[in-house]
Image 1 (tube, each protein chain N blue to C red):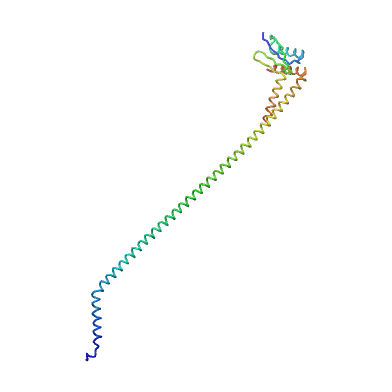
Image 2 (image 1 turned 90 degrees about the vertical axis):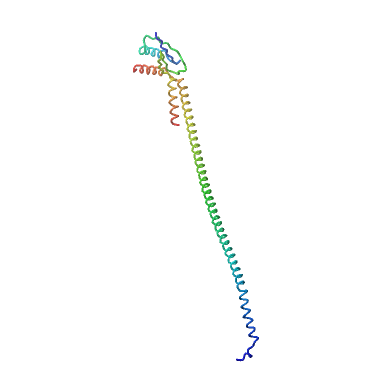
Amino acid sequence: MDIITVTVADNMSESARNKLENAIKQKLCAASSVVFETDPKLLGGFIISYGNTVYDYSVLSRLETAKAALTEEARNNA
Amino acid sequence: MDFSKIPFDLVINILNIVVLFLIVRLLAYKPIRKFLDARRQKLDDEKAANEKIKAEAEEKKAEYEALLRNSEDAANEKKNEILVDAQNRADEIIASARDTAKNIVAEAEKAAKEQKADALRSSAEGIAQVAVGVAERILSRNVTDADTKALVDEFIKDISEE
């Protein structure tokens, strides 16, 4: 059985976890086992990993993307 | 005719003078004339020799003067060439110095612009990092369950469209 690892922030509610687990089993693989891990550094959201595939919906990645975009914009406008 | 009245002494004197004249003319005139001619010839030769020497000296003098003039002309020409070369060299040095100064100024301006751009870039990047840091602190306290569920919905929507 495939194992799907879901890393979540420590502030994720149980209902949100259930909603996410159901979506994973419906959309990705129903026969997989979903394992939740907690990482406070994510700030919010989650990261789904299985095999070589990663879905990153964490607030941390959004912030990193925003930071990169802002820095690039600052460099271009300087 | 009465010859007794003729002054005999006078006749004798006249005859003496005539005989003397003839003797002197016969004996002395030619040698003296020859001597005088020879002397005149010698003087003429010396005069001609002197004139020849004088002419040669004049010719030499003219040659030397011409040579001197040529030397002065050559010296003046050389002097002018040196002055022109020196002026050209000075112009080249001045032009080169101006180019060098212009390049130094241009490089300094370029470096100043680059430093200004670097400073602005660093400042802007710093501001961006500060903004992201502030957002991170705010989000760490304010991410709600609704926000998380919105991310779940976004995931569901994305995975459905794949």
